[in-house]
Length: 405
Image 1 (cartoon, rainbow, N blue to C red):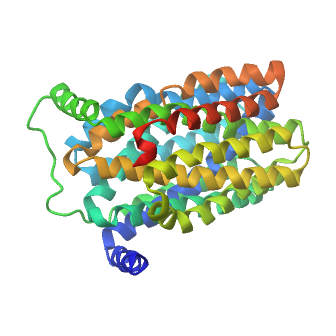
Image 2: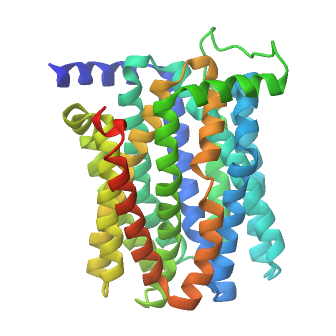
Image 3: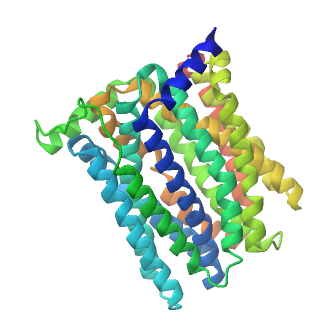
C-alpha cells in the first residue's frame, strides 16, 4: 500500500512542469559543478604540487556559506526567487569564463583563483538556497521525500557521469576547455529556468526590517529542538565528509600514482553507491524512521573511511568510494528532507540560510588544516581521523531522542 502511494506521488511530480524544469536545470548545473569540482583541485595541484594550496583553494570556496549563508537565506525569502536564481547562474557562468582565461594565459598568481572560487561558491550557495525554497513552494508537503529522493538520484547519477565527462575533458589538449564547456552548460540552465512558473502564493515578503526578519528565523530555529539537535551532528559529519572528498584526490595522485583521467573515472564509484542509495532510501526510511536512518549513515561512512585508510590499490579504492557514496546519498536525503519537513514555507529561506551556515561551521577550518596534516603525516591520517570522528558521532547520536524518532 505504501509503495503504491509512493508511485502515485512520483507520477504526480512528473506532471508538475515547474518541478520538472527545476530538476532538469539542476541536473545540468550538477554536471557543470562536478566537472568544476574535480577539475579545479587537479589544476591547482598540477600548478603547485602542494596539498596546502589545494586545501586553501577549497577553504576559499567554503567561506561564503559560513560568512553569508544566514543573510542570503533572509534575502531569498524577500526577493523574487525566479529572478534571484537567474542572477546566481548568470554570474557563475561569467566567472567560469574568467577562470578559463586565467588558465589559458598561464596565470600562476593564486589570488585570482581564490577570489573566483570564493565568488563562485557565493553565487552557488545563493542558487542552492533558493532551490530549496522552490522545492518547498512547487511541491506538496506529502511529496517532499519523493522530491528530495529524485534530486538525490539526479545528483548521484551526475556523480557517475560528471567524473566520466571530466575524464574525457582531461584528455583534451587544454584544461581550460573544460571550463568553457562548464560555462556553456550554465547558460543552458539559465535559459531553462526562464521558463519556470511559480504559484501565485509565491510572493516577495518585505513587511518587516531585514534584521527583524532574520531574528524571526533564528527564534524559530532555536525553538525547534529536533532540527537544532540534528544540526549539531551535521556540523561534525560535514567536516569529515568534505575533507575526505578533497584529500582522496591527492591520495590517488600521490599514493596510487593514478593519472588525472583515471581519477575522474574511479571517482564515479561513489556515484554508483549513491544511485543505489537513492533507490532504496524511501523504503529504508519506512522501515527504520528518518532519525535512526540518519544516524546509521555515520557508521557507514566510518566503514568507508576505514577502507580508504587501508587502501593500497585501485580495487580497494573503488569499494571504499562506493560505500562512502551510498552513505553520503542517504545522509543528504535525510538531512534535507528533515529540514524541509520541520520548516514552514514562509521561513524556508531563513532556516536554509541559518542551518546552511551552521552545517558548514567547521568545514573551512578542517579543510585548511587538513592540507598541512597531509603534508606532515600523509592522507592516511585524514582518513583514520574521519573514521574515528564518525564512530564517536554515531555513539553519541544513539543516546539522543532523534535515534528513536
